[in-house]
Length: 399
Image (cartoon, rainbow, N blue to C red; front, side, top):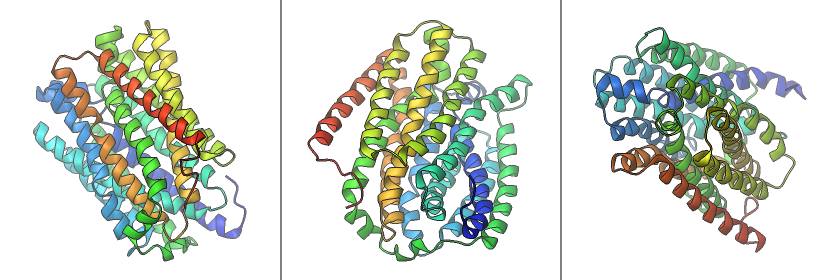
């Protein structure tokens, strides 16, 4: 991304360090998916218990988002981001000492807290660093985040293959987070920081003024994220138990799902700068419904791999589309506050995906029945939103 001014040039190192930190933050949030089976075996835990570990990571990501929105009305965004790096360093270090599944749950909650604070503070900061190309920089930032999701199954699989403990990824995460946080501190001191956040001083007022935009984002991403979280956290076990895919291959295919999100973030971020926001989001959501249904009927490793590739691409296209819609349209006076309200609410909704799926499995429901029902529910949502869009009832931007 070539700079267009001296100010941009001074901001690029900061943007680079933010991309490095978002990689680590998202790694900590998604690393529990490939660890579901190892954790279950190591602690002799139930499906519901290991599902709760992943849910707590996402619930932890949800809980601080609204308080962070208030904090951002008083504290500069880059300082809050620095705090998330320190919290991630400590939380992942504590995870390496957890002797029981209950303390793993606590560690997952703390790692989630770091990610929640980060995204609420960093996403508006990224959009304000380069206000003339919001979709593009959101896409690049999201690509860095998605690289972590793509590499997590590979790294965990490699660690387990050579008989290291499940704790090893957290040793690496803690050390890397400490280094990147220090680099971020240095680049922030040298950067020409934006002052767009100066007018954003009323958290509840900002949410109230932009409630229609916030509500649309919550409905689309919250409900879809609930389904997605429940799906991907049990994806390797689903393939092994339902599709007859070997465990090692299942972990590789989980990597395929996340790797498909790398070009999705990159390309869809650019599309979001060129096309109308709401139709783009609805097209992506409808594509996710189709591919999720296809996953429940496809057979054979090759067929599963192809559908997984498309599934990963379409679901990850949703996130840069919605973030660009929000951050590009919200005014400076409401951006951080309204985004925090959206982010907190949608994360609470989607955080329960893993424990819902784990609980349903524990009561005897089959994977395919769960995922088909979820896809059908999302299909109803898509139809309803399309009808409202055609009737001119959906917000197209900030009011």
